[in-house]
Image (cartoon, rainbow, N blue to C red; front, side):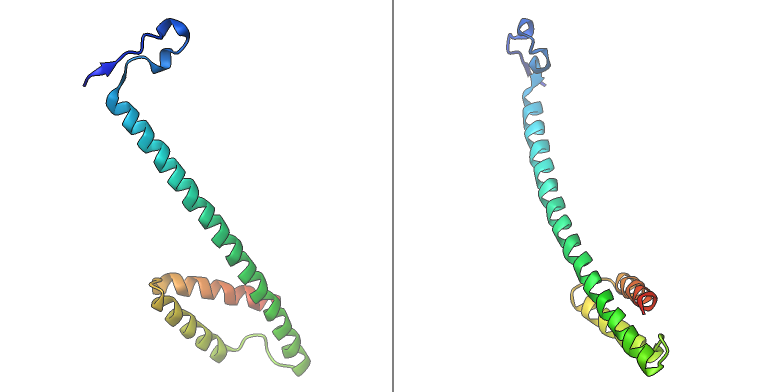
Length: 118
């Protein structure tokens, strides 16, 4: 591997001295990778914010449902309705390429949170 020197050792730039040519490409590739990761992570942060808002909206509706159930003397748990909600959620998730196990975990967590709000 051929290294190049820049003749600046005495100028306080010793970190640049004798860096192989391939090192520059690796550094540029690493910087590009870091930039791409930051871009993707920013997108994840935005998506997470939308997910949090959707969960907050869902729980607000669950509280309303709880009030209606209490007023009507109905139980909080409606196993038949929960089965329908789970099946619909899993089907929608599957259509988006989301694994069924992941979809079930998410919807069951949301249902548990809704129950606690009711």
